[in-house]
Amino acid sequence: WCARIVRRRLQVGVRLGLYALAARVAWAGAHVCVRRLGRSDDPRVVVVWFQLAAFAFALFAQWLLHGSNEVWLPLPPRHLWWPIAGIGVCATLGQVLMTFAYRAERAPTVVAATYAAPAFGIAIDLIVFAVYP
Image (tube, rainbow, N blue to C red; front, side, top):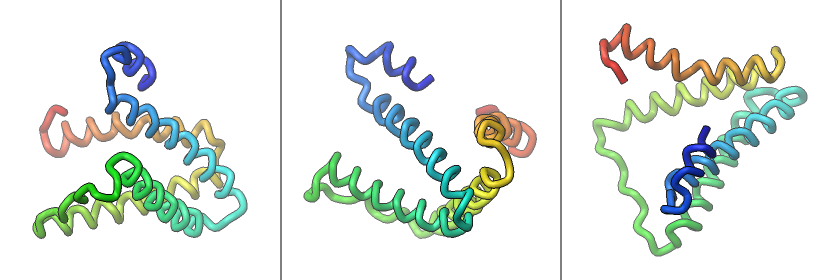
């Protein structure tokens, strides 16, 4: 989908669309790596190395896109630190569970479940928060 969206406006120059396309390709590569490593290594070890590699890649991308002289984004306000930490904990838990899922189930089933996540998000928005996204 991302490639179809980007292709329509490529002549105009959709920089953020190209970032989204690159992110999607990286996501697919990450799933392949997690699937292969999850068979032989402990899922917690896979998650730790995956997080470290993602952090290193993000730093490299920041340097590549903005250079070393660019001012890095400031820290978020203090009142957001706990929610951001909670998001990090939930994301890490999700990564651990996904790695266990790749060990226990076939890859197409796991990937299909990840594609269902936006539907669950919309349902939770509607049911819990009474907000239409």
